[in-house]
Image (cartoon, rainbow over all chains, first blue to last red; front, top):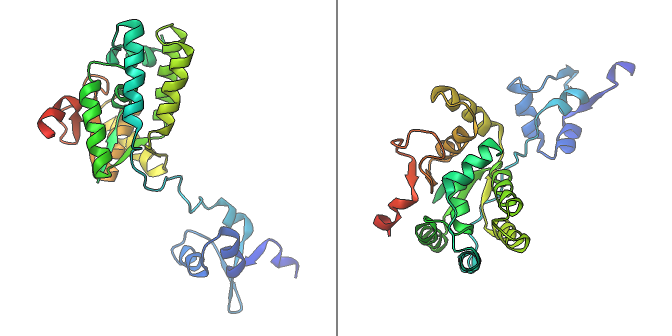
Length: 101
Length: 144
């Protein structure tokens, strides 16, 4: 069955991408993923599957601000102010960063 | 509830700045209310580089720099890096005729997330501050 080289079933494609078989069929029906029908079964080129963008976006799970952070930050701010007697000018810091001065 | 923050606000949480007292009130309010605080992923590089520059220039001691950096990492920000964000940032930078994309990325994230964009330095973004999403930390005293 030389012509089947590099082709995988929907089930194998789903397993390889860590998604359900229905998701893979949806990709095929929407035209996102090319496939061919041999008999009653859909086959997908492994290469086409690899070219699909990752279904898992690099997006963090919901989290909130850490309690206790501000107390530690105030201590550090106080330490810096006591040593230097100065407060930082945000505009200057950002200008220096943008100019990489 | 979600809010998007710009690097000037994050820096005023860590370093002593004239805006730090108001920024601190805002942080505690958001912490109490369980607000999710979002930023584009490049904020990490921005804040790290600025902190590093302060050590390099002798304004912070290496120990203060280490503490500031650790504090930043422990803050609990949600950093975003999605094609949708960058695509909208690119569009917005054209619409607003900005010379760079980073300012637009902050606004794009606020727009995509349907939230406000908070900053501590009004001038730093270079985007129109009359945009209803853009909020300045100086407004905080009328908020709380």
